[in-house]
Length: 523
Image 1 (cartoon, one colour):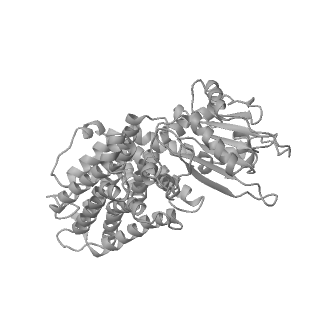
Image 2 (cartoon, one colour):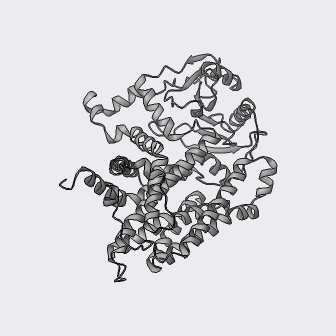
Image 3 (cartoon, rainbow, N blue to C red):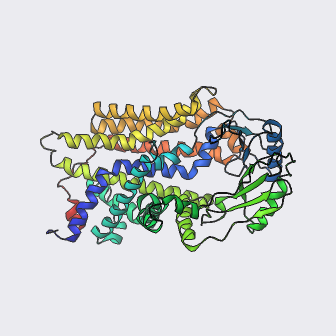
């Protein structure tokens, strides 16, 4: 601290940003892609057509299908189609063969207009990016611990960045193009300040979401070490009556939708669970759509008697602490956002990703300048260079490869969804080998160019492998399918521009006449 408080904060900002920057780049990018999770899943299952349908009609078709194909199941689950997720999905759980064991689940996709089975290709769709964002494809709970730890350090990096840059608003209006590392620093400052409220909100809310995991001391103290008692009180289990053994016809489910809407003052039903269908103790639980409100209601269900249709219980009023937690959860997830606000979320997420990426480039560039005359790069700087290329350009190639695998893998392939994910990681791993063999600027250009080619070709690939080319999607008004193709095309053009600009750079560090010290510049 002898150099001053702000210098110490600059040091902390620099090293926290470096050590966790590569992981944070992947977390931010996949989290940003997850804002269009439903649209991505729709593109990756083109067999499910986008249609405007009635929830009541779709629910009646789902009930008829389940009564025909799963009359003896212990539970039905129905996911209703929405404007963003056009598929009608039914699942059912068989009664367990032995006490204490879970019954086997089955799942089918139905046409919401006819009720016929739709043979959609197996895929994780946009859910892959959503889960990778906070689980990092690691076993529970290690991925959540790592991503939450990275979020904590991101929050520290944001606070120290604010302290370090005393001319933060002046920096926002300052950008000097074609000035080498100075331009990178200006860009880093500009995108950091432009969406700073979003960065603070998204980072802090991620810590609130996993608060019970990362800060359990209060819970353990209040409940005398019994964390399960806390969760049972906050999230009480549904009181599902046991099977009576007396057959009874299930009441029509469609009329229950209107009763639920009245209970929620116009809210929408997202999904239904039918317990003990065909039994006298049948019950129907309707879950409210999380897109109805900014504040996520953790107990938003309404329960009805499955035989008489009588309402058994309604959503209780949320305690203030849970409402606050629900507000942070809702803001982070963005389910409430309409198309315009969702795009704003997406753009802010990309800005956060760019802020992390430019910070990594600045760190390496400043230190490369010191070795520019000798032409010899130390091992540690070469390692950072490889990690920079792989975590940014390599990750973009892997994302594009994930989309390509969805179209190229046979539709009936066993474990198809797993192989889509495997393709993502295999291609990402190959980018590591490429960055190790090809150095600096050459590796950047080649990987960015390959990513550009793959993304630009996504609309063509879609048109060649499905009936829904860009022209058909636009003509039918399927904006999710067309928007995905156009977004990939726009991303490819941007990456092509980045590769072209990189060709004219002698070194990714962009050697300038004199080194710019980030710490000195900050003061």
